[in-house]
Image (cartoon, rainbow, N blue to C red; front, side):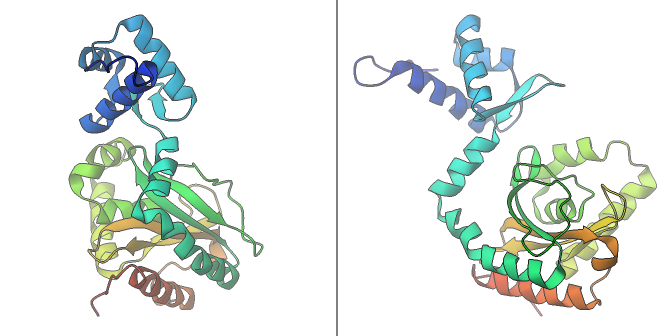
Length: 255
């Protein structure tokens, strides 16, 4: 890593940014030894940088694999700095309406290298609180996870899916892939009690004008309140909201 000139910048800050930049460009989890080789920083100094960046949430260290990836704090910064910063502001009134209509918690999540992460929760109308707070990562077999598994490119989600579904039998994996094909066609996803008994979810994608997946909105609550197929009244309502929300970002769904 190129050492910045002294006198005009804060050198330690530049080095820290350089570490973040390298991890971002590599696009994969990196071990300490990988980062050390790429940055040419001494092990003792690199440990201090990585420890500081991890504690601040800018980097995330997987304890099982001892690898580093970009942390959730960078997602917050990125959303505030890009044109997509208005996504949450734009969809919040819709989420509030869906919360009132369904009497269930409504979540908005975006993709991260660790999988879908909740960045907005609306639970003002007696919605059932499953403890899914902002910053929570959602599994692939949730209604939300299935949306990302369906609409993101394979190279983006391949490692995540392999890790999440490593214990599935071949038969169940085939059913999962078939379900993703149905979700791709209908643009709505269902999950019956994937995490907690008596709690189910339904989710739909939020697209921009290029049909790029911006995120997913999920309604989660008691199973008797959550639909299981697209012909139910709440599903029809959510499909209409889905078309309306993505329409605000320029997406036109083919009828």
